[in-house]
Image (cartoon, rainbow, N blue to C red; front, top):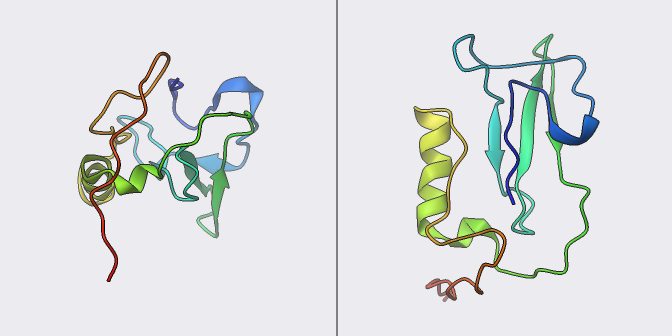
Length: 111
């Protein structure tokens, strides 16, 4: 399941003290994406002094094993879009959440 973000406040009481959002209108984090490749998204926030970035991974244990979200072309394009224009969390090209079926095998080949 996904969590709703409110500015740089994270669910579950995770402290984000010393971080700031990227804009005043939507108060969004720097990035929301599956960067570490375990299919669950990490959150990136900038420190208020603009001297570092902080990565917040999930600490929730899961038995679900699927391909990294970056294998999904829709998701990968949305992460790119998030960083180049409209800063909103990306979405996958298939249902992900409670009761989901296994996602399709990625159509990616390495030579």
